[in-house]
Amino acid sequence: MPTEFDVEEMIARFRERANAVRRRGLPPVEGPERQRIMEQMQLDFQDFAILGDATGSLEDGILTLRVDLRPQPAAGDAAQGEP
Image (tube, rainbow, N blue to C red):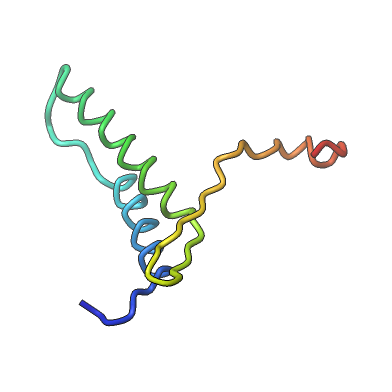
């Protein structure tokens, strides 16, 4: 294990994991099992994408990840002067 922890590198790995889930094909299963796999893939993507969007810091041995989960304004809202 490296002696220095790179927060940005870790976040980049989560971005890549989210992309890998999106590219992953479904195995040849049908019925309820297929639905469970699809639901798990969506959860995996969501979790990896959230962490991939984080900003991180490591201070005094404490890893802090900040993720803004507030809804983004629609493109038209900002042009109309809404916050």
